[in-house]
Image 1 (cartoon, rainbow, N blue to C red):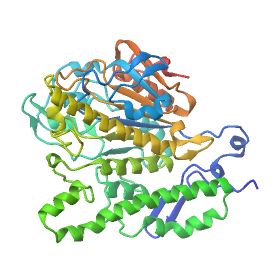
Image 2: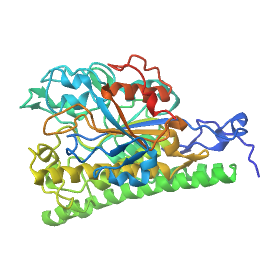
Image 3: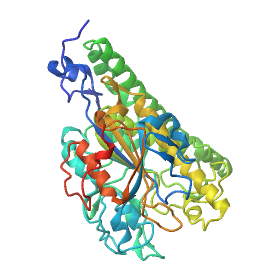
Image 4: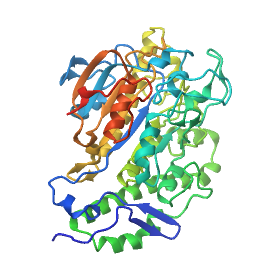
Length: 460
C-alpha cells in the first residue's frame, strides 16, 4: 500500500542527549518526484589520500579505454573495474615550484597552488581546498559541512632535509589558504559528533562522549516513525539503524578493553594491540601494529555520514606525509612506508612498497563495497557518489609529481562513464579533476587554482 504521509528532509531521530540524522527516504521526497521513474538522491564527494607515491611499474594499467587490465597494485579493485576510472597524466603543477620533498606535495593536493616556505605555523597553501569549496556550497543543506578524517595526529617540527614545516604533511583539507580544516582521528569523537547531537562549532569535540548507546536513546522515536512509513522506507530505516548499531558495538568493545588492559603485562598488551583489539589515538607508528580495523571503522563512520545526509563531502588521509608507519603486519613487509618509498631500485624494498600500496587499494575497495551495499533511490549510495583516491607523488624515491596515481570511482548521479583507463594530454592540471568534481556537485569552481577547464572525457 502506498504511503502518503510525508516527513521533512530535516527530520531527525531524537532522544535524551542524542540526535540521529535519517537516511534519504521516499517519505521525504515531493509527490512530483516520486511520480517520476527516478528519485534523485543528493550527490556526494569523497577525497582519499595516501602519502609516499606508488611503486614504479606496478600502478599503470595496460590497455586504453574500456579494454584495459588492472595493474598489480590495483587488482583489489577487480570487482569494481566497471565502476572506476584510472586517470593518467594528471599533474599538480605547483608541486614542482618552491619546496621539494613530500610535505609540500601533500598540503596542496586539493588546493593545487604553491605552498609558502615556512618553518613555523604561518602556513599558506594558496587557497581553500576543493572539498571545502564544495562544502561551502552544499554544506548549507547538511548538519556538518564536511567530514575531515584520518588516523594520524598532526605532525610538528621541521623537515631537516627540506627546511619546511611538517604541518603541511598533516592536512589535505583547508578552509582557507592558511587554515587547515580540523581533522578527526578518533572514531568515538567522529561518531558522537555526527550522531550525539548537532554541534554548532564544527571544530569542537565532545568533552564527555556518550557512554550509553546513542541508538537506544532514540529508539522510542524510531519505533514511532517506523509505524508511519511505507514498507520500503521501513526496510531502509531498519538497515540504517543496524549499521549504526554495528559501529557502536565496535566502538564499545574498544572502550571495554581499557580496564582489562590496565592489569596485564606489557608483552600481552603489545600482542593485543597487534591484533587490533585496542588502538590508542597516540599509537606508536613504528610498532608494526595493524591499523586496518581503525581505518575501516573510520570509513564506516564516513559512510554513515553520507548515508544519513549528515554531510555530503568528506576527506580521508590514510597517513600523514612521509609517514614512518611500520607495515610489518603485512606478510612480506618489515619496514616503514617512508623508507621503502625511497627504494633506490632495491627489489626487496620495491616489493614492500608494492605490498603497502596494495593494502591501501584494498581499503578503497572496502569503502566502495560499503557504499554499494547501501540502497538508495533506485540504486545505491555508490551511484550518487564520487570517490577520488590518489597521492601527491608518483614515485616516492624521486619525489616525482608528474602523472600522479589517481582514481575516480562512483556514478556521480549518472554523470560519469566509468570502467575506463583514460590517458589525458601530458601534464593536464590535477585541478581540472577538482573542477570537474566540483561542477558535478553543483559548486561554482570556474577558475579554481591552475585549472583550465573540466575533464569532459569522464562524462557519460
